[in-house]
Image 1 (cartoon, protein in one colour):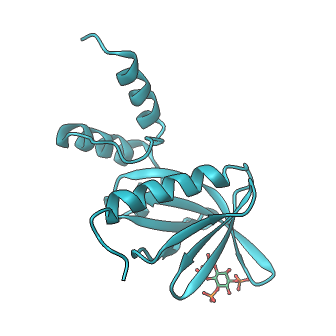
Image 2: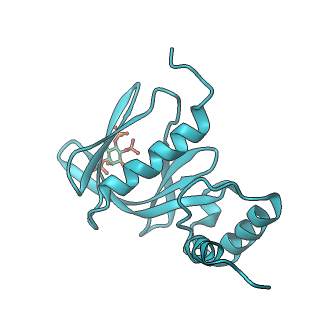
Amino acid sequence: QIKTNEENNRQKDTNQYKAKYVLPYTREEKAALLEKQKRECKWHRFVEGNLILKMASIDKRRGLFARRRQFLLTEGPHLYYVDPENMVLKGEIPWSHHLRVEVKNFKTYFVHTPNRLYYLIDPEGHALEWCRAIEEVYRHTYQNEKKT
Ligand code: 4IP
């Protein structure tokens, strides 16, 4: 089967679970991706069967201290975070249409929720990309809803 460049690139991206970010997958494509995730991704067991759209190691600051957590942005949407040392799910940032992201600099970004501000630091410096991903998922989820 001959594939277009676009398809190839998309395949490359999805192989790394780095689809950009909400693609109109067919049911078959999605099932295949989920199968692959189930087989190959060690974080799969934390995401309740949801497809992972983006993930990375992020420092979540609380007070003076930060904890390094594996963040998993999935369909649903969900933003789970896992303690990578003990391989324990520590929590998730609650999604609602009130959720809002704010990029501070290339490493730091905030996720605002009604009850809490999440102070997040991406040691790799992809804060803007995280904000883009979250906003993309936000638009996809709430595009037909009005903020109240
Ligand atoms: C903890 O600090 C960790 O940062 C927790 O993060 C955090 O919970 C706690 O905040 C905070 O007190 P110490 O480990 O230094 O005690 P994590 O759950 O990732 O381990 P969350 O999950 O809520 O950020 P509180 O206020 O939720 O308890």
